[in-house]
Length: 84
Image 1 (cartoon, rainbow, N blue to C red):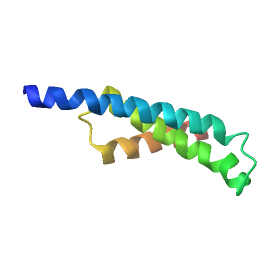
Image 2: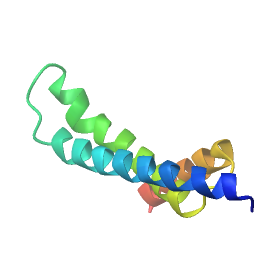
Image 3: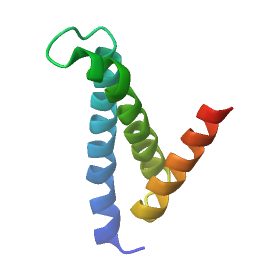
């Protein structure tokens, strides 16, 4: 791997970690939320953030994976878990 790609990979992973922490905090904050559209935020926003969390985590671990392939597979796995 070229030196340029290695130097770009480090800030990319730092940004992924920061966004990952933000998504986790938003996910925890979505459950006690009582403001505008509280029903939607309490019931659905957490599920959306759960999907985003897994996509970001797998991207952090495996950065060369295709984003489309990753998103579909995370969706399929989490839907399968819901049916279990």
